[in-house]
Amino acid sequence: MDTIRGIIGSELGYVFLLFGLFVVPRVLQRWRVPTAISSFALGVGAGSGLGVFNHDQTLHLLATFGIVGLFLFAGLEVVVSDLRRSASILAQHLAVRVAMLAVVAGVLSYSLGLDTRQTALISLALLIPSTGFILDSLGSLGLTNEEAYWVKTKAIATELLALIMLFVVMQSSSATRLAGASVVLVALIAIIPPIFRLFAQAVAPWAPKSEFAFLVMMAIVVAYATRQLGAYYLVGAFVVGIAAQRLREDLPAEASERLMHAVEVFASFFAPFYFFAAGAELPAEVFSPRALLYGLLLTATVIPFRLGAVFLQRYLALGEHPRVSMRIAVPMLPTLVFTLVLAGILRAEFGLSDTYVGALVVYAVLNTTFPGFFLRTPAPEYDTPSLPEPITPEQPPRRS
Image (cartoon, rainbow, N blue to C red; front, side):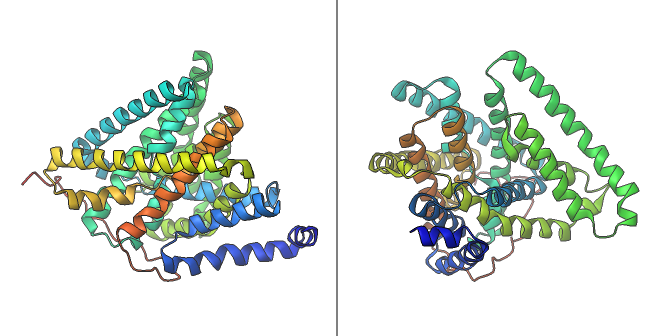
């Protein structure tokens, strides 16, 4: 064992890591196992099993690039006109989500005796889909353009709500802290567009093809800033992506299809490091038999609850057949990124027990694996198919 740790701790260990993250998960895709799950499992094996890579600073940096890339890509996919076009349906969807969060938080508070902030974060971890991960895998699920459109817009709208709630919960220890952090965040958001314009006018004309590097740099800097605010990296990266997309008409180079594809490739390359690091940092105690049991119970209760809510909302709003709603609800199940982030916060900052953290991890792994098996999608090739061009109907479909 010491010999293995010595090899992995050397430069050769990073060669094995690259091989493991970019070859093994691709092989397991033949059995519909998402690459994120494979990378996470490899991290668990390295950290809990071999005791390596669990405090590696280089891996931590690569993992940061991964989480920033995922949420930057998700932010770039936010098209405000699409959200406005389906505003009534999305408003109903968000109202249902808020009600679901309240119900789950109430049940957790009553049954586990946790405080308000803990129950709020656990509720978000259980109910909020990981938009960046979903968008990255959407093209491989065999959805029609209309189905992809609804999955994309609903996931994005839900994540916008979740990030606002996450920020409020993390800063709600006092009214003064919340007010101060809100002022800083608003100021941060306000200065991003002028910085983009300054770059486009003063730098880009004399530095061709530098837009991608500048966009990623901005995402990382703002992500670190929001991390210092206690809102983790994902808020800042998401905000930068939205800002770049909003400036598309004024600064087309900042949100061109070529640039968006580059960000998608960047996120796809570094995301495995994030999932590997997330698994490597978890101690063996997190995967106790009780945690496994609780995770299975969460899966058996929360997944039907989430699917049923989508069925009900879409039937009442659109008169849609449950079979059609299922193809929209199932791709929105994965919560892997959001759950892992919040589980880490709950464990490090709120002292949540390893049993409950393990239950959240088991639940996230199962709900992320579920869509590929349920939709019976063909085994993906080694390169991920591109996202189909979603439709943007002028009016949402009416009830038949």
